[in-house]
Length: 417
Ligand code: AMP
Image (spheres, protein in one colour):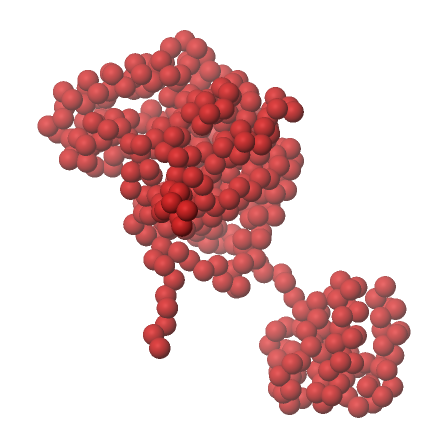
Protein backbone atom coordinates (compact mmCIF):
# COMPACT_ATOMS: atom_id res chain seq x y z
CA UNK A 1 0.00 0.00 0.00
CA UNK A 2 1.06 3.56 -0.64
CA UNK A 3 2.72 5.39 2.23
CA UNK A 4 0.88 8.36 3.70
CA UNK A 5 2.75 11.66 3.88
CA UNK A 6 2.25 14.37 6.49
CA UNK A 7 0.25 17.43 5.45
CA UNK A 8 2.27 19.97 3.45
CA UNK A 9 3.77 22.64 5.65
CA UNK A 10 3.72 20.48 8.79
CA UNK A 11 6.75 18.88 10.35
CA UNK A 12 7.31 15.99 12.70
CA UNK A 13 9.51 16.86 15.62
CA UNK A 14 11.57 13.70 15.68
CA UNK A 15 12.99 11.98 18.78
CA UNK A 16 16.49 13.03 17.72
CA UNK A 17 15.46 16.70 17.91
CA UNK A 18 13.02 16.77 20.77
CA UNK A 19 15.67 17.76 23.32
CA UNK A 20 16.13 21.03 21.39
CA UNK A 21 12.47 21.79 22.09
CA UNK A 22 12.80 20.85 25.73
CA UNK A 23 15.85 23.10 25.95
CA UNK A 24 13.92 26.10 24.60
CA UNK A 25 10.84 25.36 26.66
CA UNK A 26 12.84 24.95 29.88
CA UNK A 27 14.86 28.13 29.30
CA UNK A 28 11.77 30.15 28.46
CA UNK A 29 9.93 28.75 31.46
CA UNK A 30 12.83 29.70 33.72
CA UNK A 31 13.25 33.23 32.38
CA UNK A 32 9.48 33.85 32.36
CA UNK A 33 9.40 32.82 36.01
CA UNK A 34 12.13 35.30 36.84
CA UNK A 35 9.90 38.03 35.43
CA UNK A 36 6.91 36.57 37.34
CA UNK A 37 5.03 35.49 34.21
CA UNK A 38 2.80 32.40 34.51
CA UNK A 39 2.08 29.91 31.77
CA UNK A 40 -1.41 29.65 30.31
CA UNK A 41 -2.69 27.01 27.87
CA UNK A 42 -5.80 27.66 25.84
CA UNK A 43 -7.42 25.30 23.31
CA UNK A 44 -5.88 25.10 19.85
CA UNK A 45 -9.23 25.91 18.30
CA UNK A 46 -11.69 28.68 19.00
CA UNK A 47 -14.92 30.04 17.64
CA UNK A 48 -14.01 31.74 14.36
CA UNK A 49 -15.48 34.96 15.70
CA UNK A 50 -12.61 35.30 18.19
CA UNK A 51 -10.23 35.97 15.30
CA UNK A 52 -12.62 37.84 13.03
CA UNK A 53 -13.37 40.34 15.75
CA UNK A 54 -9.75 40.90 16.73
CA UNK A 55 -7.21 40.38 13.98
CA UNK A 56 -9.27 42.28 11.41
CA UNK A 57 -11.19 41.28 8.32
CA UNK A 58 -8.76 42.97 5.96
CA UNK A 59 -5.63 41.21 7.18
CA UNK A 60 -3.91 38.36 5.32
CA UNK A 61 -4.47 36.05 8.27
CA UNK A 62 -8.25 36.41 8.33
CA UNK A 63 -8.58 36.85 4.60
CA UNK A 64 -6.73 33.84 3.36
CA UNK A 65 -4.73 32.00 5.98
CA UNK A 66 -7.13 30.64 8.56
CA UNK A 67 -7.95 26.96 8.91
CA UNK A 68 -11.66 27.40 9.38
CA UNK A 69 -14.26 24.68 9.21
CA UNK A 70 -17.77 23.95 10.31
CA UNK A 71 -17.92 21.29 13.00
CA UNK A 72 -20.57 18.59 13.24
CA UNK A 73 -22.76 20.88 15.34
CA UNK A 74 -22.75 23.53 12.61
CA UNK A 75 -20.42 25.89 14.49
CA UNK A 76 -17.67 27.71 12.60
CA UNK A 77 -14.38 26.98 14.34
CA UNK A 78 -10.80 27.98 13.53
CA UNK A 79 -7.41 26.48 14.36
CA UNK A 80 -5.73 29.36 16.14
CA UNK A 81 -3.50 31.43 13.84
CA UNK A 82 -2.08 33.35 16.83
CA UNK A 83 -2.54 33.47 20.57
CA UNK A 84 -3.34 36.97 21.75
CA UNK A 85 -7.00 37.05 20.75
CA UNK A 86 -7.60 33.62 22.29
CA UNK A 87 -5.84 34.64 25.50
CA UNK A 88 -7.92 37.77 25.77
CA UNK A 89 -11.03 35.65 25.24
CA UNK A 90 -9.88 33.41 28.09
CA UNK A 91 -8.98 36.28 30.41
CA UNK A 92 -12.42 37.85 29.94
CA UNK A 93 -14.24 34.53 30.28
CA UNK A 94 -12.36 33.48 33.43
CA UNK A 95 -12.18 36.98 34.94
CA UNK A 96 -8.45 36.46 35.30
CA UNK A 97 -7.75 40.15 35.73
CA UNK A 98 -10.29 40.77 38.48
CA UNK A 99 -8.04 39.81 41.38
CA UNK A 100 -5.08 41.98 40.53
CA UNK A 101 -4.71 44.94 38.19
CA UNK A 102 -1.75 43.35 36.42
CA UNK A 103 -1.57 39.96 34.73
CA UNK A 104 1.66 38.50 33.41
CA UNK A 105 1.19 35.47 31.14
CA UNK A 106 3.18 33.34 28.73
CA UNK A 107 2.34 30.49 26.37
CA UNK A 108 4.05 27.94 24.16
CA UNK A 109 2.32 25.86 21.52
CA UNK A 110 1.28 25.17 17.94
CA UNK A 111 -0.39 27.68 15.62
CA UNK A 112 -1.85 27.25 12.16
CA UNK A 113 -1.79 29.42 9.05
CA UNK A 114 -2.47 28.42 5.49
CA UNK A 115 0.61 30.08 4.00
CA UNK A 116 2.86 28.96 1.17
CA UNK A 117 5.41 26.73 2.88
CA UNK A 118 9.07 27.66 2.53
CA UNK A 119 12.17 27.82 4.73
CA UNK A 120 11.03 29.17 8.08
CA UNK A 121 7.39 29.23 7.03
CA UNK A 122 5.11 26.37 7.97
CA UNK A 123 1.41 25.74 8.14
CA UNK A 124 1.74 24.37 11.65
CA UNK A 125 4.41 26.29 13.54
CA UNK A 126 5.08 27.02 17.19
CA UNK A 127 5.31 30.17 19.20
CA UNK A 128 6.40 31.23 22.63
CA UNK A 129 4.68 34.45 23.59
CA UNK A 130 4.12 36.69 26.58
CA UNK A 131 1.40 39.20 27.43
CA UNK A 132 1.47 41.95 30.03
CA UNK A 133 -2.09 42.99 30.77
CA UNK A 134 -3.33 46.01 32.71
CA UNK A 135 -0.91 48.91 32.32
CA UNK A 136 -1.22 51.70 29.75
CA UNK A 137 2.22 53.01 30.64
CA UNK A 138 5.50 52.86 28.76
CA UNK A 139 6.92 50.94 31.73
CA UNK A 140 4.94 47.92 30.51
CA UNK A 141 6.26 48.21 26.95
CA UNK A 142 9.79 48.40 28.32
CA UNK A 143 9.27 45.37 30.58
CA UNK A 144 7.89 43.21 27.79
CA UNK A 145 10.73 44.10 25.41
CA UNK A 146 13.25 43.43 28.16
CA UNK A 147 11.68 40.01 28.75
CA UNK A 148 11.93 39.25 25.02
CA UNK A 149 15.60 40.22 25.01
CA UNK A 150 16.44 38.14 28.07
CA UNK A 151 14.75 35.11 26.48
CA UNK A 152 16.79 35.44 23.31
CA UNK A 153 19.96 35.91 25.34
CA UNK A 154 19.22 32.87 27.49
CA UNK A 155 19.36 30.57 24.47
CA UNK A 156 22.58 32.09 23.19
CA UNK A 157 21.39 34.34 20.36
CA UNK A 158 23.20 37.68 20.39
CA UNK A 159 23.20 39.02 16.84
CA UNK A 160 19.80 40.38 15.78
CA UNK A 161 18.04 43.66 15.12
CA UNK A 162 15.21 45.05 17.20
CA UNK A 163 13.02 47.35 15.12
CA UNK A 164 10.54 49.59 16.83
CA UNK A 165 7.85 52.03 15.78
CA UNK A 166 4.74 53.65 17.17
CA UNK A 167 1.29 53.54 15.60
CA UNK A 168 0.02 55.97 18.21
CA UNK A 169 -3.46 56.07 19.67
CA UNK A 170 -6.63 55.67 17.64
CA UNK A 171 -6.81 59.33 16.67
CA UNK A 172 -3.19 59.45 15.53
CA UNK A 173 -3.68 56.31 13.50
CA UNK A 174 -6.78 57.71 11.86
CA UNK A 175 -4.90 60.91 10.96
CA UNK A 176 -2.05 58.91 9.54
CA UNK A 177 -4.37 56.71 7.52
CA UNK A 178 -5.80 59.76 5.82
CA UNK A 179 -2.35 61.21 5.09
CA UNK A 180 -1.07 57.89 3.76
CA UNK A 181 -4.09 57.15 1.59
CA UNK A 182 -3.85 60.64 0.17
CA UNK A 183 -0.18 60.21 -0.71
CA UNK A 184 -0.54 56.69 -2.11
CA UNK A 185 -3.56 57.61 -4.22
CA UNK A 186 -1.55 60.42 -5.77
CA UNK A 187 1.16 57.91 -6.63
CA UNK A 188 -0.99 54.89 -7.35
CA UNK A 189 0.12 54.57 -10.98
CA UNK A 190 3.57 53.56 -9.68
CA UNK A 191 2.32 51.00 -7.18
CA UNK A 192 2.16 47.24 -7.69
CA UNK A 193 -1.24 45.66 -8.26
CA UNK A 194 -1.08 44.08 -4.81
CA UNK A 195 -0.41 47.40 -3.14
CA UNK A 196 -3.22 49.05 -5.06
CA UNK A 197 -5.57 46.42 -3.68
CA UNK A 198 -4.15 46.85 -0.20
CA UNK A 199 -4.59 50.58 -0.49
CA UNK A 200 -8.33 49.95 -0.68
CA UNK A 201 -8.65 47.37 2.08
CA UNK A 202 -5.76 47.90 4.50
CA UNK A 203 -3.60 50.89 3.48
CA UNK A 204 -1.09 50.57 6.32
CA UNK A 205 -0.06 47.18 4.95
CA UNK A 206 1.29 48.84 1.80
CA UNK A 207 4.21 49.85 4.03
CA UNK A 208 5.12 46.13 4.32
CA UNK A 209 5.61 45.76 0.58
CA UNK A 210 8.94 44.44 -0.69
CA UNK A 211 8.20 45.34 -4.33
CA UNK A 212 10.92 47.59 -5.77
CA UNK A 213 8.57 50.12 -7.34
CA UNK A 214 6.50 50.27 -4.18
CA UNK A 215 9.65 50.88 -2.17
CA UNK A 216 10.49 53.87 -4.37
CA UNK A 217 7.04 55.33 -3.81
CA UNK A 218 7.31 54.66 -0.10
CA UNK A 219 10.59 56.54 0.20
CA UNK A 220 8.69 59.81 0.28
CA UNK A 221 5.56 58.58 2.00
CA UNK A 222 4.51 60.42 5.14
CA UNK A 223 5.99 58.85 8.28
CA UNK A 224 3.58 57.70 10.92
CA UNK A 225 5.68 59.37 13.56
CA UNK A 226 4.70 62.78 12.14
CA UNK A 227 1.03 61.99 12.73
CA UNK A 228 1.45 61.16 16.41
CA UNK A 229 -0.38 63.46 18.79
CA UNK A 230 1.43 64.64 21.91
CA UNK A 231 0.11 61.82 24.11
CA UNK A 232 1.27 59.20 21.62
CA UNK A 233 4.58 60.95 21.08
CA UNK A 234 5.28 61.13 24.83
CA UNK A 235 4.48 57.45 25.22
CA UNK A 236 6.84 56.50 22.41
CA UNK A 237 9.62 58.79 23.64
CA UNK A 238 9.44 57.29 27.12
CA UNK A 239 9.69 53.77 25.72
CA UNK A 240 12.73 54.72 23.65
CA UNK A 241 14.35 56.51 26.58
CA UNK A 242 13.75 53.49 28.80
CA UNK A 243 15.31 51.10 26.31
CA UNK A 244 18.29 53.39 25.89
CA UNK A 245 18.87 53.77 29.60
CA UNK A 246 18.61 50.03 30.18
CA UNK A 247 21.13 49.48 27.40
CA UNK A 248 18.89 47.85 24.80
CA UNK A 249 19.87 48.49 21.20
CA UNK A 250 17.11 49.22 18.72
CA UNK A 251 16.42 50.84 15.39
CA UNK A 252 13.41 53.03 14.77
CA UNK A 253 11.63 51.86 11.65
CA UNK A 254 8.85 54.16 10.49
CA UNK A 255 7.61 51.50 8.07
CA UNK A 256 7.00 48.85 10.70
CA UNK A 257 3.23 48.44 11.12
CA UNK A 258 2.83 44.66 11.70
CA UNK A 259 -0.04 42.90 10.07
CA UNK A 260 -2.82 42.91 12.60
CA UNK A 261 -5.54 45.46 13.20
CA UNK A 262 -5.45 45.47 16.96
CA UNK A 263 -2.09 47.14 17.54
CA UNK A 264 -1.74 50.67 18.91
CA UNK A 265 1.25 52.70 20.13
CA UNK A 266 4.42 50.60 20.33
CA UNK A 267 5.07 47.88 17.76
CA UNK A 268 8.36 45.98 17.47
CA UNK A 269 9.95 43.16 15.60
CA UNK A 270 13.11 41.06 15.88
CA UNK A 271 15.00 40.30 12.69
CA UNK A 272 17.96 38.06 11.98
CA UNK A 273 20.37 37.89 9.04
CA UNK A 274 20.49 34.12 9.40
CA UNK A 275 16.95 33.52 8.20
CA UNK A 276 16.82 34.51 4.53
CA UNK A 277 13.60 36.03 3.27
CA UNK A 278 11.56 35.10 6.36
CA UNK A 279 13.83 37.16 8.56
CA UNK A 280 11.47 38.08 11.37
CA UNK A 281 11.71 35.71 14.32
CA UNK A 282 9.42 37.55 16.64
CA UNK A 283 7.36 40.60 17.15
CA UNK A 284 4.67 42.26 19.13
CA UNK A 285 3.18 45.45 20.34
CA UNK A 286 0.56 47.20 22.38
CA UNK A 287 -3.11 46.36 21.90
CA UNK A 288 -5.16 48.66 24.10
CA UNK A 289 -8.41 48.23 22.17
CA UNK A 290 -8.58 44.45 21.96
CA UNK A 291 -10.40 43.67 25.21
CA UNK A 292 -13.33 45.86 24.23
CA UNK A 293 -13.42 44.36 20.75
CA UNK A 294 -13.85 40.96 22.35
CA UNK A 295 -16.58 42.06 24.73
CA UNK A 296 -14.48 42.85 27.80
CA UNK A 297 -13.93 46.08 29.61
CA UNK A 298 -11.27 48.43 28.23
CA UNK A 299 -7.90 47.04 29.34
CA UNK A 300 -4.48 48.17 28.13
CA UNK A 301 -2.03 45.42 27.23
CA UNK A 302 1.20 44.68 25.43
CA UNK A 303 2.78 41.42 24.24
CA UNK A 304 4.93 39.60 21.72
CA UNK A 305 5.58 36.19 20.19
CA UNK A 306 8.64 34.34 18.95
CA UNK A 307 8.55 31.69 16.23
CA UNK A 308 10.23 28.62 17.71
CA UNK A 309 11.18 27.03 14.37
CA UNK A 310 12.92 30.25 13.36
CA UNK A 311 14.82 30.44 16.65
CA UNK A 312 16.01 26.88 16.03
CA UNK A 313 17.07 27.81 12.49
CA UNK A 314 19.15 30.66 13.89
CA UNK A 315 20.70 28.39 16.51
CA UNK A 316 21.55 25.86 13.82
CA UNK A 317 23.19 28.56 11.69
CA UNK A 318 25.31 29.90 14.52
CA UNK A 319 26.25 26.42 15.76
CA UNK A 320 24.35 27.09 18.95
CA UNK A 321 22.05 24.08 19.10
CA UNK A 322 22.23 22.47 22.54
CA UNK A 323 23.90 19.10 22.92
CA UNK A 324 21.73 16.14 23.76
CA UNK A 325 22.93 15.04 27.17
CA UNK A 326 20.45 12.26 27.70
CA UNK A 327 22.28 9.05 28.57
CA UNK A 328 21.68 5.49 29.69
CA UNK A 329 23.28 4.43 32.96
CA UNK A 330 22.76 0.66 32.76
CA UNK A 331 21.97 -1.77 29.99
CA UNK A 332 20.90 -5.14 31.35
CA UNK A 333 22.38 -8.02 29.39
CA UNK A 334 20.73 -11.38 29.96
CA UNK A 335 22.55 -14.62 29.30
CA UNK A 336 19.14 -16.31 29.10
CA UNK A 337 15.78 -14.65 28.63
CA UNK A 338 14.62 -16.58 31.74
CA UNK A 339 16.47 -13.97 33.80
CA UNK A 340 14.29 -11.15 32.53
CA UNK A 341 12.09 -10.75 35.62
CA UNK A 342 15.11 -10.89 37.93
CA UNK A 343 16.78 -8.16 35.84
CA UNK A 344 13.73 -5.95 35.46
CA UNK A 345 13.19 -6.06 39.21
CA UNK A 346 16.68 -4.72 39.87
CA UNK A 347 16.37 -2.29 36.93
CA UNK A 348 13.28 -0.76 38.40
CA UNK A 349 14.89 -0.26 41.79
CA UNK A 350 17.68 1.56 39.97
CA UNK A 351 15.14 3.76 38.18
CA UNK A 352 13.60 4.58 41.54
CA UNK A 353 17.06 5.74 42.59
CA UNK A 354 17.15 8.07 39.59
CA UNK A 355 19.13 5.97 37.11
CA UNK A 356 18.14 5.43 33.50
CA UNK A 357 18.04 1.75 32.72
CA UNK A 358 17.17 -0.48 29.77
CA UNK A 359 16.63 -4.24 29.91
CA UNK A 360 17.09 -6.49 26.87
CA UNK A 361 13.76 -7.59 25.34
CA UNK A 362 14.86 -9.05 22.00
CA UNK A 363 16.47 -12.25 23.37
CA UNK A 364 19.61 -11.50 21.38
CA UNK A 365 22.91 -13.30 21.71
CA UNK A 366 25.22 -12.15 24.49
CA UNK A 367 27.51 -10.57 21.89
CA UNK A 368 24.68 -8.72 20.14
CA UNK A 369 23.44 -7.39 23.48
CA UNK A 370 26.91 -6.15 24.32
CA UNK A 371 27.08 -4.43 20.94
CA UNK A 372 23.74 -2.77 21.65
CA UNK A 373 24.90 -1.54 25.06
CA UNK A 374 27.93 0.06 23.41
CA UNK A 375 25.88 1.47 20.57
CA UNK A 376 23.50 3.33 22.85
CA UNK A 377 26.51 4.46 24.91
CA UNK A 378 25.31 2.99 28.20
CA UNK A 379 27.73 3.71 31.03
CA UNK A 380 27.57 0.16 32.38
CA UNK A 381 26.53 -3.22 31.10
CA UNK A 382 24.69 -4.99 33.94
CA UNK A 383 25.22 -8.64 33.20
CA UNK A 384 22.92 -11.37 34.51
CA UNK A 385 24.18 -14.92 33.99
CA UNK A 386 23.36 -18.11 35.82
CA UNK A 387 25.56 -17.46 38.83
CA UNK A 388 24.26 -13.90 39.27
CA UNK A 389 20.69 -15.20 39.03
CA UNK A 390 21.28 -17.98 41.57
CA UNK A 391 23.35 -15.93 44.00
CA UNK A 392 21.46 -12.60 43.92
CA UNK A 393 24.41 -10.79 42.49
CA UNK A 394 25.05 -8.59 39.50
CA UNK A 395 28.12 -8.11 37.31
CA UNK A 396 28.81 -4.54 36.25
CA UNK A 397 31.06 -3.79 33.34
CA UNK A 398 32.16 -0.20 32.91
CA UNK A 399 31.90 0.32 29.17
CA UNK A 400 34.42 3.11 29.26
CA UNK A 401 37.40 1.24 30.68
CA UNK A 402 36.01 -2.34 30.61
CA UNK A 403 36.64 -2.75 34.36
CA UNK A 404 34.31 -5.41 35.68
CA UNK A 405 33.12 -6.44 39.14
CA UNK A 406 30.50 -8.70 40.64
CA UNK A 407 28.66 -7.80 43.84
CA UNK A 408 25.50 -8.62 45.73
CA UNK A 409 22.44 -6.81 44.48
CA UNK A 410 21.80 -5.51 47.96
CA UNK A 411 25.27 -4.02 48.35
CA UNK A 412 25.03 -2.54 44.85
CA UNK A 413 21.70 -0.82 45.51
CA UNK A 414 22.87 0.37 48.95
CA UNK A 415 25.97 1.90 47.40
CA UNK A 416 23.71 4.14 45.32
CA UNK A 417 21.50 5.40 48.13
P1 AMP B 1 3.21 37.09 13.93
O1 AMP B 1 2.11 36.62 14.81
O2 AMP B 1 2.88 36.98 12.47
O3 AMP B 1 3.79 38.38 14.32
O4 AMP B 1 4.36 36.02 14.12
C1 AMP B 1 5.25 36.03 15.19
C2 AMP B 1 6.37 35.11 14.88
O5 AMP B 1 5.88 33.79 14.65
C3 AMP B 1 7.09 35.45 13.58
O6 AMP B 1 8.08 36.39 13.79
C4 AMP B 1 7.66 34.13 13.17
O7 AMP B 1 8.85 33.88 13.87
C5 AMP B 1 6.61 33.15 13.64
N1 AMP B 1 5.74 32.76 12.52
C6 AMP B 1 4.65 33.38 12.06
N2 AMP B 1 4.10 32.72 11.03
C7 AMP B 1 4.87 31.63 10.82
C8 AMP B 1 4.83 30.53 9.92
N3 AMP B 1 3.87 30.40 9.00
N4 AMP B 1 5.79 29.58 10.02
C9 AMP B 1 6.77 29.68 10.94
N5 AMP B 1 6.85 30.70 11.82
C10 AMP B 1 5.92 31.65 11.78
